[in-house]
Image (cartoon, rainbow, N blue to C red; front, top):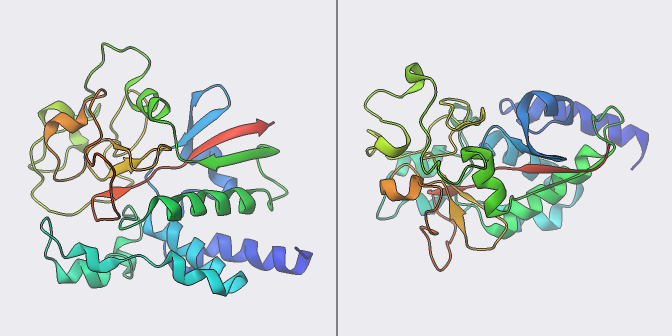
Length: 253
């Protein structure tokens, strides 16, 4: 890639295409990622609409023939869990939802995003690590991020009582939220480590295709357990209940 295009790209990266703050910019890795294992880091936040929109727009500029494979099926907001035309029209498009988790996304789209993020990270000469790969976590890596390594810790509580949304209990005391949609991905820490919305916002994909973990805003409380089975067994399809969180593996410091 020529220097002129690299400068243009980094400018777009900083502006986030006018659609809100992104969580995965290379200069913000130390702020937005936490270490969960040696050389393995997890984003504190679920991947947001702003993140995905920046990805989509970049692909539309550089590889326009691929962009149609990346379109989110927003019509899936209209289903048995939600019959919400406003969300169907606005959830992905409106800046109001820029920091909400991206949903209606396939396993292939999530992996394409991770591959793109890896490539973009390595374009930054000031990146904090020389070589990394961004990817979906293995199920056990995700569990360790949220619950720690002690198998006796079946549930976790929100450590900050003030962070509980009104009318909503957290983790093992959870009840159905007073809203049938996700909430801002940058609110409500949940876990042994400072991660946000690991439980009960949207279920999160893991590296085994079709498997999800963490429960979503309409889940049975069982699915907030560390040992819960895949709620979407034998495999999920893109829907408003599932998003993903990016992990970063350091290959070379």
